[in-house]
Amino acid sequence: MTSLQHDWIPRPRADVDIWSLDLGAEEGFVLSRIDGATPLGRLPFLTGLGADRVSAIVEGLVGMGVLTAPDPEGDATAVPRTPASPERSSSSDAEGGGWRRHFERELRPLPVDQRCELAQRSDGVDLRALCFDPHPKVAMALVESTGFGLEHARLLARHHRSSQGLTALGRSAAFLRDQQVIGELFRNPQTPEALLDRILRGRNLHQLHALAVGHNATERVRKSARRSFRRDFMRSSAEECVNLILKTEGRCLSMLSGVALDGRTAALLCRRPMNSPMLVRNLARWPSSTPPVLQHLGRQAVVKRSVDLRNQILRHPNGPSKLAP
Image (cartoon, rainbow, N blue to C red; front, side):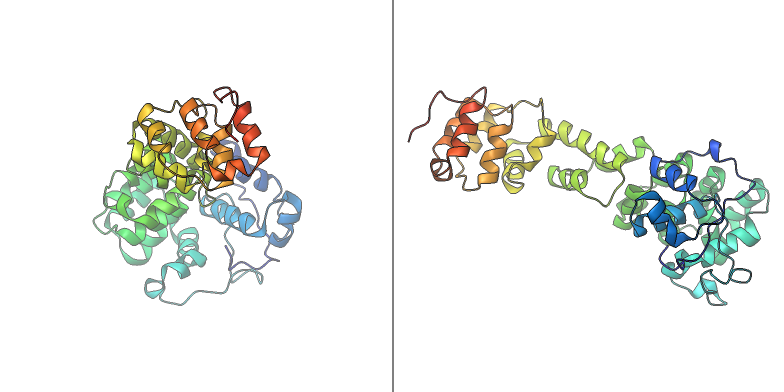
């Protein structure tokens, strides 16, 4: 929520039962520091989190209806008013508050059933604004609407905070082919495990490893990616496994504790020259490295020049008793 000024004061909504919400650990922690008197700019100091991370969490809490949205008419510290014709605004303008403010002012007071009916027959402003509705029934009605398109799917994936609503979004294979929708689902703390597994199922080892160690997804997503990576490593071809080990200089092996190295993969590793100390060190530390692989490491020039690498190979449970000088 970079458009919010640092002196804007987030305030909890009095009509929301926070104990009924499915919040992540960071969301709950930040919410516990919001007292209705502390400005946004002070929250990083109170939480120990980065300013960008705090702003993103506060944006999510506003989207869930936990916090009162800024009101440019009654709050001098709120974001500026968006153009008078929001349907001509870009998605970034919408995310800056225009569609959300329309939802908070005009649509949230309506009964849920009426909002669901509106989701199925509306377009333009109302359809975009309803993407900020936290109720799962509204999200499901949106996805079934004939006017619901890729722009709306991206908004819903980013701002909706119920697993049922996100599951409904994930039923469309067309939306799950869009990388922006996938990225928003990866960053959404409420994306359900079943949907994550479905998205991850189509990724190769390199993509799973990058996601597991990256910082553009929630910890739940990284955990799911690590689980999928371990499963798929054992099912993938020896060539793909070897290419990943070499490309990552063995860093991927830290996620493969307890995974056995099959004969074909070991044989291919033994055919490749290894000039990287990092690669040798990671293979020498990996419990599943086989005797032939360790003997191959010992013959590499980079090992012969390093006493430390030689000793690491010799200390391995499968290592040789000595290495050739």
